[in-house]
Image 1: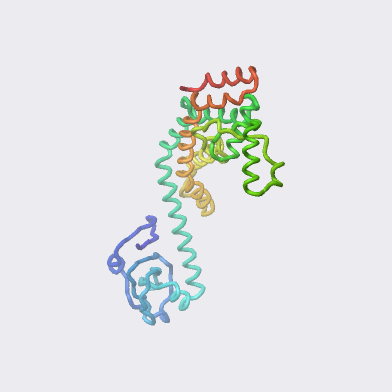
Image 2 (image 1 turned 120 degrees about the horizontal axis):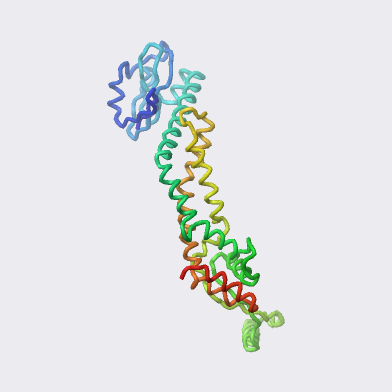
Length: 307
């Protein structure tokens, strides 16, 4: 692939034949008698291309197209460029590559801008629709105790499921006498009588499994995900892409490069939140209510959830 930087922007050419037909192109220039004007392109090929310098002509796969002060154009590799044109070539290559990166960033941001209306509409819809991100975020905050709308025993059960990292709901209870005896017998069989006194008096029972658990997971906060998307959309809509500095182009393009991944996260977490916040799924937490007041408060929360 050949990339030319022209007044029209970046031009990409697949065929070397097109380069050889460029006015002024020559495959044989004496580096001792030529002065470089600028680097006008770069190329990368699987097939090797002979160097255009008369003192080299070694085949290579990566190189630059250079324009001489006398109007001729040829191709040289990076090593030959540094060897024969020293600091001048190094500076020109930096300028060229910076210009290419800036133009690539402009093209990338321009492509994103073409999608801007669609993306902005999608994010706004996800936020405000029934059982959308705003609705989910409020109820996830209640379940995890970021707001005080649910009894602490239920919040603690959810927090423990989050710490376990798999959405499993566990109820702790006192071990029965039979369970303690069985544990003691197992310890004796293994010849670890000295551990007999450490037989636990608390047993963990599996009380349920929350579907849509990723909506509760650390790092999946919907407000934070949307907060990483909306400022970029605003900045892109207001930006004059052609007049941005190289630094501004780099920074905006870096955030833009994360846009599709963040949109994917947003869609996935909202989908998980809708699976999580169904009445049947959340009903599993009712076992953790420890008083009639807890049960009434939890029932109020459940009534707002879809079946």
